[in-house]
Image (cartoon, rainbow, N blue to C red; front, side, top):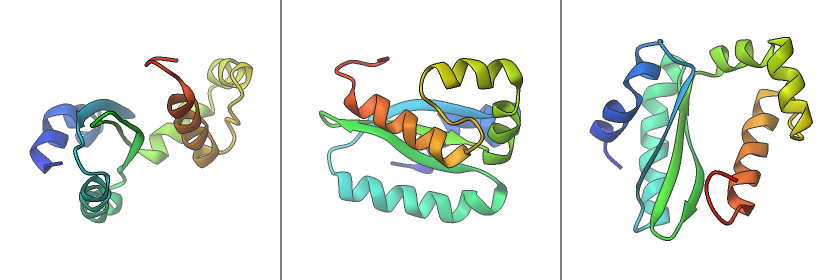
Length: 113
């Protein structure tokens, strides 16, 4: 996965306009995807952005690029907390929310679940 792909699909997040962006990309080799994401995270994490694979299936990956600080702020909203709690999320724990989203997407037959 190239930096150009991330720039093209995640410009609003990279610019600080949005909390996060989802995009899909080709993934013929999961190990190569992991290496590419590690390389990208080394550059992006110091700038307050993380990029993770939410789901990898049938040669494609669903990627989530997000600003953890902004997501924590979004999850602090009372209406968001109420809605997310109904779906089994723990809005007080950012990492648990991202992991729950991964599990939901990985267990679903189709996207969105």
